[in-house]
Length: 455
Ligand code: NAD
Ligand code: UGA
Image 1 (tube, rainbow, N blue to C red):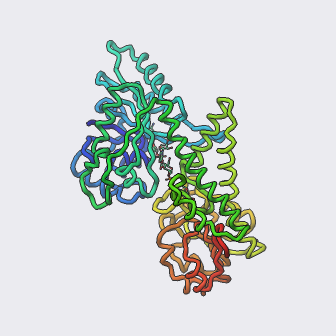
Image 2 (cartoon, rainbow, N blue to C red):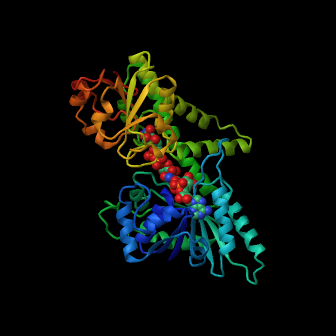
Image 3 (cartoon, rainbow, N blue to C red):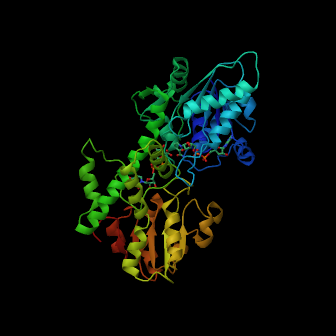
């Protein structure tokens, strides 16, 4: 099938590359010329395990292209994905201006061939109908003899950064919302190889499950709500275990053991029960806020979701509280951060807990050093101009009064903590993700503090 993906960020690029890998003819569009040039040269502008390999393989087979020419891409495609960003406005609601711009481009360029417009971006509930209206109003202004035919489908994305390729080929379900049987049947045909697990082998993909992927078909509003509900539920689950960690810390219980004990109950499940210094990233914070805002618009006070956010806001500064407990005055002290990104295996710093932590340490007069495998220059975020970015473990710990593990990058488990302890003023480790082996750290001479665990 001929597919166009408009917006080539984490979702659009991964979607385009994966659809090309399963045999579709894909053209990816972005209005960022520099980014398109990079992709045309076969390089991924983002870090995502396996993405470059699959992208280059699809490009060499000739069924994946990149362009800034949105009109031609729209006219030549049967299925058009909208995958642009929907960041949060200062009010907490979703900023839909990029979706609106793409809908206008579609109305402007759509031709006689029937097309399916797919909302892949996470959009406020009701956006499917709104996108249809925008496209229709643009079409009307063209005074065409024959009105182009199209339908809108909501197809929310559930991939996680850092495992986006794996998640795209191994989804727990595919959600398709819409009321046109023609559009839904084209979408099922598009995803058939993923549903049936008929995916060409590639070393970067890993092992596929053998089971057929469930396809959930709903109306537009329900599909849009499923996306917000899933992210809000997961964020709430993490805030719940973080609240439990704070209780465990006070009563002398170990939240890791508690999570294991409750996670084995199949009604609860063991995933997303890792306590830490809070959830972040480009989606959980903005999506929970957007759902609270939508509820508010319709006269409902979403108290549980508000509590989910409140617990997370406090949790993000828990490491500072723990540093104050051991170091007392932070002014003039040097704190080294292990990791900056909101989770491992991504170069994404959007709404990362590290940012709040750095702001608070700056406010309290501490000097901040940081090491992250993928963030090694300050251009990633303005806050980094206040941080000494180090490129080696030795560089990070030298002269530090304490360390805080912010991101559970795998390499941190393999560092030589015996050597590192010797270079610190006081070997203190606040493990913000309960990621390191407390006994190994203690044997290396560290005073180890986890989250919700006995010290
Ligand atoms: P992103 O900010 O990484 O990428 C958006 C891209 O769209 C950018 O490359 C930008 O240049 C491009 N763009 C903006 N306006 C455009 C236009 N008019 N024409 C062409 N290109 C345009 O965004 P993202 O993280 O990929 O997220 C996209 C959407 O998917 C959001 O709604 C997000 O909530 C949702 N989502 C994201 C993730 C994730 O892991 N990042 C997962 C699931 C869903
Ligand atoms: C999340 C969802 O998991 C995806 O399904 C969804 O598609 C995506 O948001 C989105 O809509 O953008 P992502 O943000 O990439 O994916 O990463 P997660 O693995 O969900 O982690 C989010 C945050 O929660 C990270 O800061 C992580 O450190 C934190 N987390 C996660 C915990 O603190 N504890 C856990 O047990 C799990």
